[in-house]
Length: 388
Image (tube, rainbow, N blue to C red; front, side, top):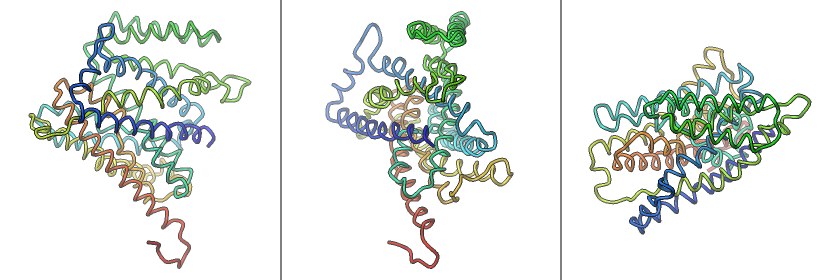
């Protein structure tokens, strides 16, 4: 549980910073909308500040996702096939059902392309809520939620790469793959100098962006190439652990708050949902996150346990799995990221962002309440009266 506790501590603290940045963005955008829009549209070397954050800095965040996926597959909860079956089935249900709800609501409207938005779970916010309830939930649920979030991230990466990348240019893609191969060679040669990795990694990012595949996918790929173990060394001394230790604070306390500042500034006002497909986008996202995750995640987990391919987390019961399903409906960071990729229409983007905020807030509150209620019931001794 050591790596999980460490990861949770960073993510929980980062969730607080992320929340503060989101609130600041909302206040800024509604108090001074023109200043907010002008600031983030400012040109820097031919790119807007928003693009620099979303396409550049967020690559570090996706690099950390790749690292966490690699760690979980190599030495974590997902390294054991039986242990991985439950979070895999739960995450799959928690992706398919929200996408289905979104498509059912937006069918025939211009908003239908945003089906990937409610599939995502924001692990920082979800773990921050779970950490605040630590005494009421068994530690196995931390591992379960982290496993679900990792698999959820894999799903989001696939969706971004397949559905939300532009037309692919084969030559640039080949150059990007070549750069990743060069990175792998450096790893295999156990080169200890950091500079070659940085140069090759930046090249992979640039070539991937030019190929039409979203540049952040290069970050994920690099994360998957970094070794999780080295013979004769404990895992915490391996390159993966050291890279996470070096980058996690920057991601949690700088990059993600900047992303929230740049993307959560929604101007609320009359007519915000008047555009064609805007209301459908808002409802599809909010209900996809809130209802889709609450239904899909426990359903996937139940099927895994029922068929015998998975086992329940130690000390947990179905009421708590339902609470985790609600918490998984907090889809802030990756949902907003996919929103930026899914729509060219600013009105649809804003509507989807409203849906992300509304669905995530309600999911966080509902999930916390369910976990508090089920935690009390689990801890009550036989014959003890209910509290409150």
